[in-house]
Image 1 (cartoon, rainbow, N blue to C red):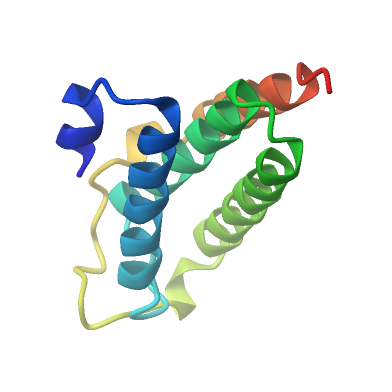
Image 2: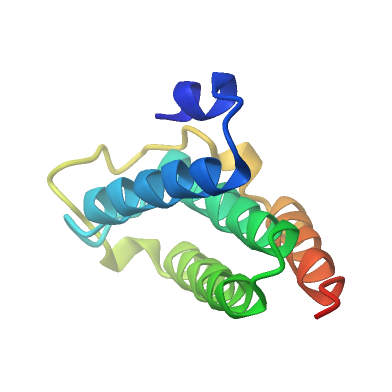
Length: 125
């Protein structure tokens, strides 16, 4: 789906549709347990930030705000998880999974949120 989104030169509406589909897949995958794998959280945070920017591009402030709130909640959830990892577990994942951890430092997460917030604040409707 990500590959199709990258090579597809259709409208931004089509790109949004594909990104929302990918987000639904990630959300379904993450609903399988308490352990949040870094790679999936990185992809989710990245997608949410991108969706805020895309809805900003089409001047849909309501949807941009919805995804900005989802991004904030996702970041808060991940930080809470990171601070209390010993009580989390899931049979689907290796407890020592650190794939993608370098993308989820506080600085990197802050960049995604800053980009999304800046895009949201730039909407002139």
